[in-house]
View (cartoon, rainbow, N blue to C red):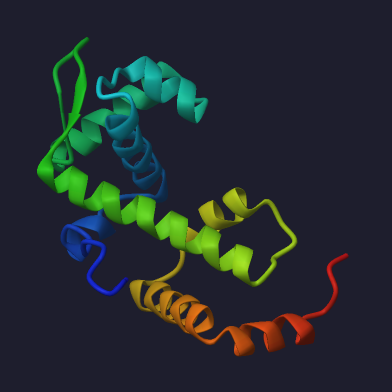
Length: 154
């Protein structure tokens, strides 16, 4: 995604391909917690994602193996520089998709729909969606015409 130089590119697309959608969700949430809470523990992640402690530990172990997080048993979880870069990308990708769904007035649970979409769209598709959002912001007349043409919400 390119946003007029306001966001970082993902920390190595090749490495991101090694993350399952589930691990992406864990890293995205760990990154969010690192910003808001500062201190991150396994229980925090389990509560936030509504998953078991063993599931979190397994995910943390995999993220640690790929150098996205640092964690010592029973200790705090910290996000590495590589994890920060990818976490920032994952959060931005989610935000962009939520914005897209809002702009097109999708009649859905925007957060859940964006979550479903984010793991299955290519980077080029994400960039195209971003271009469309930028275009519609700059060309309000086109956006208004789109809204008139769109079928009425159910």
